[in-house]
Amino acid sequence: MRAALATGVDAPLSLEEREIPEPGPGEVLVKITACGVCFTDLNLVRGHYPFARFPVVPGHEITGTVAALGGGVPGLSVGDAVGAQFLYDSCGHCDYCVSGEEILCPAKRVTGIVADGGYAEYGLFKGGYVTPLPAGLDPVAAAPLMCAGLTAFNGLRRAGATPASRVAVIGSGGVGALAIRYAVAMGARVAVIGRSARGEASAKELGAELFVASAETDAAAALKAWDGGADVILNSAPSTEAAAAVLTGLAPDGTLVLCGYDNTPLTLSTPPMVFNRLRVMASPSGSPHDLRDTLAFSAQHHILPKVEPITLDQAQAALEAMGGGSGGGRRVITFA
Image (cartoon, rainbow, N blue to C red; front, top):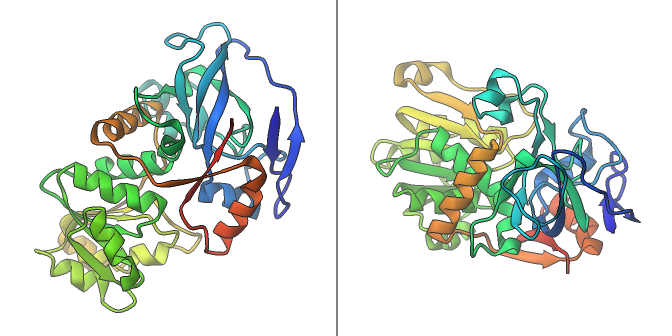
């Protein structure tokens, strides 16, 4: 099989031929259909993860079909359409694992960073962390749901978004565009904060009722004027500062959710937090049950991202474009 490997920090991907692995006990061999190109993949080769294992096959937005099963994998059959996600596996016995919150396990391993991921024609994954795809869900367009979709959907519901909520989304890229659509489908009123007015038309097309250009307007004040502020602000932009700047745009009892961030420390004004009982939380992807819920909700509401299929040979160029700020649409590596 062909695979693209990240061999070290700042090194270009290396295309290689490898033997197709055989699944052992508890493992699933997946013939990969598609793998999304995620900002996390770029951060891997930029050296942002000191725990990364090189060489490693990047990619954690994976769809495919079950090619073979090791022993002791219930609920799956050869030929099943499946997805694999950011969470590769966890210890299985800590309090977080036994309560279904494997994403919080201190011993968790991450697909495409410490375990081989989806920039390859086949992948070997753990049985409990491979999720069946709902019938009729296009596997190429669905690939980004394994991370971008999961992060957005789980962030909204962990923050308590309801049909009565006013939800503001910072950024309308991969995670942001899906967060907008999920919030609209949940019945919430939605505002979008972008850098310039150029994003207004697309945000309104996704269902937003309000657009705020932060380069031209005080975004926090604009949200506060939106019937008293947002109940949930979800930051999808890779900027911690962008999230901090709109804290006072929250309504009392509101929640700021960090789905996007950078290495800048989060600095917040304490008095408005205390007097308005504001909360700040982060959303680190999700556990297997969260992915099942994300895929079911996406299928029910016909929510799929717009994607640009590319080949494995184009993966390096896609990462470089993303790093240069010209990533364009959501690129997805596809395999015949």
